Structures are given as C-alpha cells and as structure tokens.
Image (tube, rainbow, N blue to C red; front, side):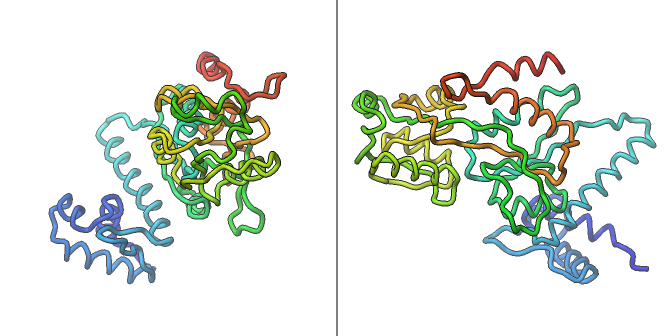
Length: 318
C-alpha cells in the first residue's frame, strides 16, 4: 500500500497558496531548496507535475489543482480535529467558491452574489476569475461550487455541467457628459461614425451589439476592444468613446464613473447564467443566488429590464 507523506503535501499546499517557493519558504522558515526537493518527491510519488512556471510565480497544473483541493480539505479537517479535541467550537462560515468568466462586468457579479450574504450563516466567499474553459475544468473537479457566465454551456464539451439562466436585461449606452449631449436626441442613429469602445470579439455581448448595429445600418468607429469590462469603463470615463453595459447596473455606472446615459436598447440582450455540476442546485448559497436573481430580473410591460427591490424582500423572508 502506498502511503502519502503529509509533510510533502503540506509544503506543496503552502507553496500553492503563496504561488511562489520563496514566499512559502519564508512562511515555513525553511530553505527554498528544501521545499523544492520535498515537492519533487511528492511529484515522483504521484507520477505527475504539480506546478508550471509563469514568470517568477508558480501556476498549478490540472493535477496540481486536484491535489490542492484534496490538501485543502485534509488540512481543514486536521484543524477541526484539534479544535474538537480541545473543546473549541468548530462551526465555521459556509464556503462558496465561485468562478467568474472575465467578460462579466464586476458590478453585475457583485449584484448577483449579494443574496448569498443574506443567509443566516456566515459566508466565506472565494472568487476565481478566468476563461470559461479553465473555470469549467475547475468546476468538474469540484474546486468550484458554481461558475457565473453570460452564455450557457456549449454543446460538445467533455465537462458534464448544467446551465441555469438567472435572468436577462437590455443594455444602456454611456458617454461623458460633453459627448452625450449631442448624441441623445437622435439615438441610436447618432452612434453612426461615433468613437465606440466594444467588448472583446469572443464575448456574447459583442455579438449582440454587432448584429444590432448591422440591422440598423449603423457603423460606429471602433476605437477600442476590451476583454476586461472594468478597463473598458475606465477608457469610457476618460472620454475615449461610447460604450454599452447591462441596464441592470445603469445607476451604479452613472454614479461610479460620472457618465451620462445616451439611450437604451431592449433588443440587445445580456444574459446571466449559473453553471453547476448539479441539475438541481443543492448548495444553499448558490440556491439563494438563483432564487433572488430569477425573481428580480423581470420585464415590465414596455419590455424594459429593471431590478426590483427583491433583494431586500429576500433578506426579510430568509
């Protein structure tokens, strides 16, 4: 029978948390060469590489992520054992590991996750941002409880996962006050030839915007494309162009970036999904997020999207 050396696993765990052997060595008060050698022995025993180098830091391989998840559980259980033996309370916060596709606006992510903090138990939230493929791989090995994205799971993927639509909304177009003044009256035709900041070509919103522009024979002058929505808004705040964002966060964008609304479109849709490995969601925090979102992102009789005071009502009912 093969026995796992828990000292080796512990050195690996600490290094993975620090993403750097030097920092891990300072934390453990051991020489970097000692830690490197111990991790090497663990890799020999497991017959696979646990890290790959990315500049000065280390990145977990697929096997490394799997081993780290088990190590995290092992050492958490060890702390719980000591607390139990010594008579200390062992109940801790409910951990929620969330993957966030990098194309999603951060303000939307915060709004969608808010109901989790309304549960009776304390929440320990861990957010991982990245590309959908990487996050789904993490989800498949249960390193994540859910993935927030703007598209359902694509057919043909090897990962078995389920898409849960949280809601959808139209988009609002923003610009600095000096630019917006001349564009509001004749919207959306006023966008023709105007400097435009667009999401990256791989985002769902970009495809919807391109189709909408084509249907109206509008040809904005694209001056920037951004995978990072926060960076896009910074350029918009500087007056470099007009940009679109989900109407569900219209007020927050106006307040945070001091921008004006040019107009809105309800034909350009932004959708939000939770991806899970369960057809019926069981994690209480994920279930709370799904319940609140599906009851708050509603359409009124004019077809416009709005956010009701459902989050406040949700807190009171729970």
